[in-house]
Amino acid sequence: MSELTLADFGISQSLIAHLVLIFVVFQALVLTSAFMVWMERKVCAYIQDREGPNRVGPAGLLQPFADVIKLVFKEDLRPKAADAFLFAIAPIISTATAFAAFSVVPFGGETTLFGLLDQPLRLEVTDVNVAVLVIFAVASMGVYGIVLAGWSSNSKYSLLGGLRSSAQMISYELSYGLALAAVIMLAGSLSLREVVMNQAGTWWGFIPKWYVFLQPVGFFIYMTAGVAETNRAPFDFPEAEQELVAGYHTEYSSMSFALFFMAEYINMVTVSAVATSLYLGGWLGPFASDTIGWVYFMAKVLLILFFYVWMRWTLPRYRYDQLMEFGWKWLLPGAVLNFIATAALIIWLG
Amino acid sequence: MDRIIFYILAGVTVLASLGVVSSKNPMHSVMMLIVSFGALAGLYVLLDAPFTAVTQIIVYAGAIMVLFLFVVMLLNQHKEDDPDVMPAGLRGVNMRAGVLLSLLLAFEVAWGLSRVGVTMFSSDPAAVSSISSVARIGTSLFTTHAFAFEVTSVLILVSMVGAVVIARRER
View 1 (spheres, chains in turn red, brown):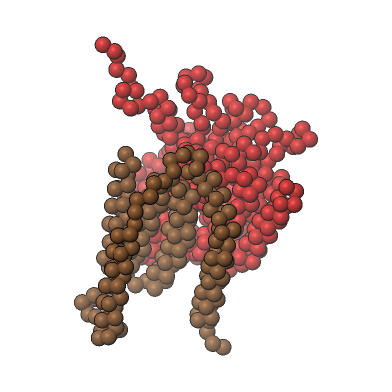
View 2 (cartoon, helix red, strand yellow; view 1 turned 30 degrees about the vertical axis):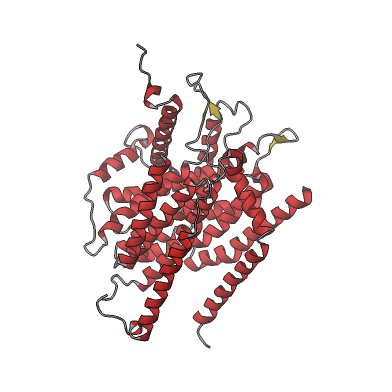
């Protein structure tokens, strides 16, 4: 009588490894958003010459968890005139799309976990060969969460916030897409893993072959559009407090508010991770990027995230018409020129 | 396994499409249409066409439906008018013409479907690999179908200019 193994139930080792990987990535994203809340408050405090959260845990590190516990026990309010179903589903759409976008981002080379696995495991949830487009598609779905939240709340501030955000996201999506397209042309592939692999090596032995050096304009456009897509300051019009109370999530409370909050931070992480993969060489680093590549990856993502926070507490918010003018009259033509110039140079230089 | 997923996705598509036409709240109709497009994209993935699936999401679910949503939100019409009262434009000759046209459409669809045969797709992994399909779609768009492609883009441009002309106020 032979012993029953997991394989007899159709469960292979790589399936388990993948499920564990998905779970780890999910938890890591949740923890990162908690960490980002802490970092935001801490950096903001130092910029404003304060201490910031310092009561819960060492250096206030456990503050986000205290906040979450507080939010869980708060009453979940819903305006009487709100569309119940859409009101409930809007924060879920926001969070789900935020998580989904990260699923195609590779964050390391292949690993066997020190020989634990028979087959090497690729450090990413799934390797889609149209990954760049998937991210773009999922990002464009994210707008529904905000728009629906604004509409279903049946409040003028929410509606205005939702309208502004959809207009803003549509306007900046074009520049975002064109910046992505220029990198796709350089790499000749739509797979993020291949884009990263194409950035291996150095010029003259010390400058890494990252696309940020080939696409400085594209990188700037991508980062600017990324800030607008994630509704962060200085482009945080959907929730401009002085004008719109809190914008699209004015009527939300308790955990549904926390979901929007989390979605915003996870979207930031995704935009930073994609920027790292497209422009900063992903998990590639000066040495041993096969084994500790994920450390390089996290360091680069963290740097961009810090830049985000730094910018938010340094720059004032623009006016709404300035934002639209900048998006359509400067950023989009710049992105088109960058795209055409890249195409021309690729053809000219072969 | 593929068959089960197909029936689930096809069911969602059909149910969501029924929801689009039967829902009285225009906002719910828009959401149902997005669900329908999403399930349709899933069907494309089943057909080994991830590029088509993603484009479906970006163009239809992402871009066009946001514009729909915009219009519905700006009109802010929460409920449809009472359906029992026929609008004036739908009586008499117009009504009969509409009935005739829909009969014609039903006939055309039935005729078209009856002529569809089963086509076997190549199961060679190299042939269905999607990056090659992206390249192939691009090549055929700019060579074989270049004329149709350019005409379509001019058509879209014309409709855009037309919309601006109609929407512009006389000064």
